[in-house]
Length: 276
Image (cartoon, rainbow, N blue to C red; front, side):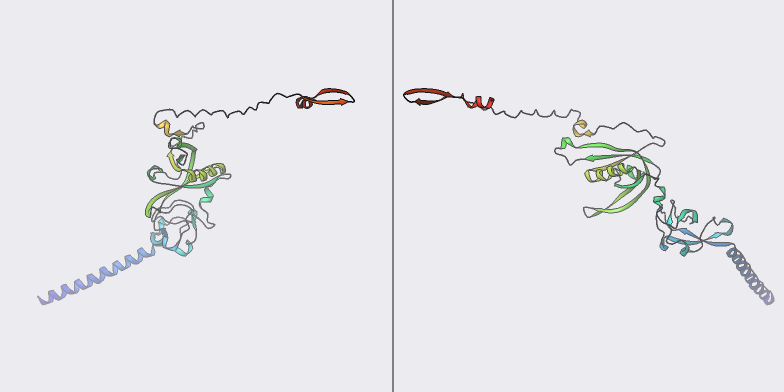
């Protein structure tokens, strides 16, 4: 009985060490078939300069390592993204620009990238994404009377280059706003800049493939929303004319005495002199 117990314990010990050796051998084989790959920790848009806290190193199977992947965070930090990248996505050389300015590479010659801030309502509830097409409306309320406030379309079929959320303050309270960057012509960029100072901006999302543009639209005023025509302009009163009456010329006479003869002669009037 005692011999059987001893033999059983010996077999258990031998089995334990045997299994441990096999597990260690498998672990070493697995480690030998993986490579370090740098990935993005969180979602980033293009034109973002990558810093070390934004990166992670994970193990990838040797056969699954993407072409152009990096194994060291130091080799990636300081470069700029050229595309959108999602969390845990491997960072590859084709997605980066060592020169920076990732967004500038998307701006075509003769065009400009101009940004505008919109809220959840005026920005289509945050559903505007890069590649979409939008129209831009401005609502101006700083006018002489409320009836004169208006909304007008100022841009049509503008391409969205970038869109992202950011936090700002309003009335000492934090609010979420969406910054949307559009590809526009230089003159359209001036219109955007002026409109943001004059009123509030609204973006209208277009359907995919809808590149149509309408003729210049008339602004919509408050009176139009109430279903009546605006009041006609007040008649302009003519300025009073000042008429000066000229008194009739009174003939002037002089008395001429020649020796003993006396005569009177009439002098010419001022109007007669003027006509001469």
